[in-house]
Image 1 (cartoon, rainbow, N blue to C red):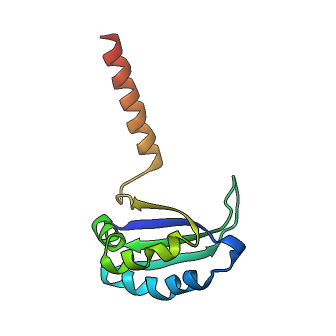
Image 2: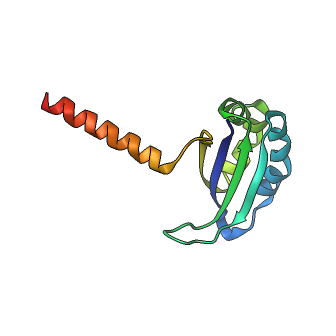
Length: 122
């Protein structure tokens, strides 16, 4: 099951400085051994809420690969270049099973709420 990395990225002044450019020049090579690949990178079209900055979407074969990349010596070495020169909100999220539906998810929640209410009345 694939795992996705989403980074809400804000670069002061909207143009990477020298350290930021150095990060960009090196980061791809750190992700390749872990099966990491970029799916989207750039400006977003805001349809609701607030989202200053850009977005980065990466895919890894699974959560283990994503976590191993993030904690790898190669990425740990360049990570401060991003952290010290940009603002990032970064998350990992796993893909859904093939049979997933939002309706089914709502049904699970309703079932859990019903079970909790039955337990409270017993």
